[in-house]
Every structure is written in structure tokens, then in C-alpha cells.
Length: 448
Image 1: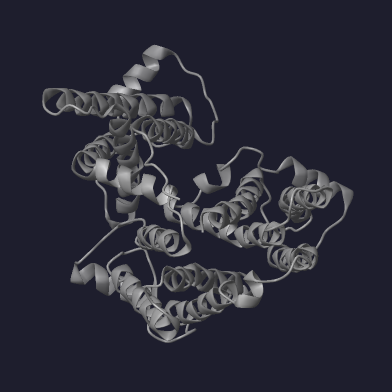
Image 2: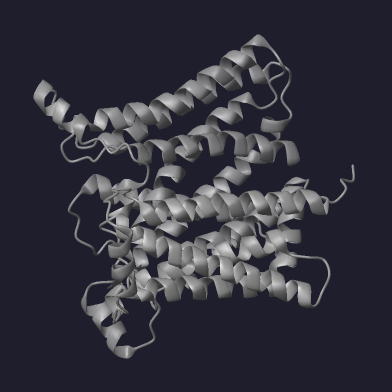
């Protein structure tokens, strides 16, 4: 069946929804922790007129780049929303309107931050955000329509090979972008020497000190899981097979480590390449499992057993998640301790990530999503090819219950663990990761 291309109206609506969602994210993220402190307007205006221009060193470069990166998607998406079909002056007017609005938003955010300590207000932030808007506008002007068309075709792609190839390049682009964050790039021999001396270049496999074995295992497993989809998608796309796909995945991991060598705050570690090898091997096994004739040619009795095995596998993965997030299991069940801990529970979403670096926030966000995404995918796999019936409805309800209750239970259990920092952020991300895996696999199955 030939599917007609998406209409311009559908594409424009999608870009508009993305732009609105990202705008809410920018405003919310700029005002966290939402600790409002009132002051007279005259005093705020006086303090705003005197905001400094900071002299940024290598340690503060990441913050400046983070503000620049924050406004690149804003300029890109909003110009895409207003992008006219006619060439000439009307496009220039649209670009200038987006730039003016983005700069006004940046100034308004910086002014509002005066009422929300401990946010830092400086001229550097306004300059970085305005420059980010310029970069985003220029990117849409040069590549926006082509990128929009490519994404539209990717979403509407049919067939396993076609879909896998498009997802592969999307995933690799996202992986490389994440891995060079926070983009505090350097080619200075002096700064690279300091990076080496500070232990951020490790040429000995597993040659790092281990303070928390479970946290180290958590990081290593995550590093391996990040590369499994690359090999899987390469094999499913038909572009690479078997050991060839494995070798190309390892080469991509080596290229990524080379790029990280020039990012001052990132650690270049050969251990990451070894974990990529393991992840690539896992991807090959998954590809062979998905393509096995026994999996796709079973008789009508196969779906009856698959949901049960999928749910058992999901419970096993859930047990692993509980072990990871409850380690070292030093529970304190005294009533006074639990009441104090509940009073410290961070109910405000993403508050915990404000007190760390931008890179750490992105890392924790991806870790929580990636650990719960397989849980959703396992449960969705059990529902594939189940016909409309009471059994499928019951299975879906049990799956949704597990995807909702497990993250909530893990966070509530962490209340009794003194070394943990329970909050709503991790619970929200875990739930999103689980449902992303569940509905993502169903969506991919329908198009493959």
C-alpha cells in the first residue's frame, strides 16, 4: 500500500505543538526551584539595570553553552511554525519576529529570575540565549524544510528496513549530541593537559576507583545498553549484518570517545569502548531473535503463552530495577525517621536536577528513561498479535498497573533509605520511560 505524504497542515501542527511544549519547558526550567521572593518593582528594575557581565573561565563555559543550546530549538521551532511558503521579505520578517520574541523572552526570564533566588542573573545569559535564537533561526532557514520533510517521512515510514534505517540515524545523532554535552570544547594544549592530570583521560580498562559498586554497575550497564540499539537497527535496516554491524558500532564508539577527548568536562575512557562491544553483541542477539522464523510463524496457540512469559520477564526486570535503585538496602523503618524523610520528599518536578550540572541532569534523565524503557517494551511484546478480547484488556490493565506502580513503589521505598534522595522527578521519568517503551514498540510493530 502506498501512503500519501503528510499534508503541510499536519506538519505545521506538529511543529507548533513542539514549539509550544518547548516554550513551557524553557520557562519552567528557568524558574526552578520556584522559590518566589517578593520585592518592589522599583527595586527589581534597579537591580536589573545593574546586572553584571561575568568573566567566564573554563569552569563556567558549560553554563554559557547551556544557555546558548537552550534557545537554539526555540528559534528553530518557532520559525518553523511561522515559516511562509513565499520567498523574499516575508521570510525575513518572520525571522526577525522570532528573534525579537526570543530576545524579549530572554530578558523577561532574566528579570523574573530576580524574584526566584538562587537563580543567577547576568548579561552573559541574555547574550547566550539571543545568540542561540540566531543559530536556531539560521538552522531552520538553511535546513528546516528538509529536516521537517525527513522527519515527516520517517514518522510515516513503513517496512522494517526503511523504518530501522531512519531510526538508526536519528538515534546516532542523538547519541553523539548527548555525548559531547555540555559542549565546553577545547583544543588548547594547556587545558587538555589539565584534563589529563585531573584523571579525565583513562587508557586502562576499568582503571578507575570504585567508591560505590552498585552505582558503578549501574553506569556500566547503561553504557552497554546505549549501543545495543545501534547494532540492532543496523542489522534490521539491511545495511550491515552480523560481525560487520558489530564492527561498525565499535568504530562509532571509538569515534565518539575521540570527540569526547576535546570536551573538557567529559571523561574519555577506553572502558566505554569495551562496554560498547558488549552492547553491540546484545544488539546482534536481539536482531537474530526478532528475525527468527519461529517467532513470526507460530500457530494460533503461540500468543496464549507469550503474554505469560512476557509478564514473567517483566517481573524479573522489575526485580533487577528494585535491586539497583534500593541498593545497599539499609532500610530505616523508625516512625520519626520516615516522617522526617517524607517531609524532605521533593514533590516539585526536576527540582533535584537544578542543583547539579546541565550535563548531569541530562544524564540522569536518560538513565531513568533507558532503565524503564525495556520494561514497557517487554510488556508490549507480550501483547503483540493478541486479538481483541477480555484477555488482552486484562493484560493491558496489568501492564499499565505495573508501569505506574513500580516507579512509585521504588521512590516510596527510597524514603526509608538514608543514602537516597526520593522525589517526583525520577518517578515521572520512570513512568514516561515505561510507557514510551510500551507504546513505542506497538507503534513500530504496526509500521514494520
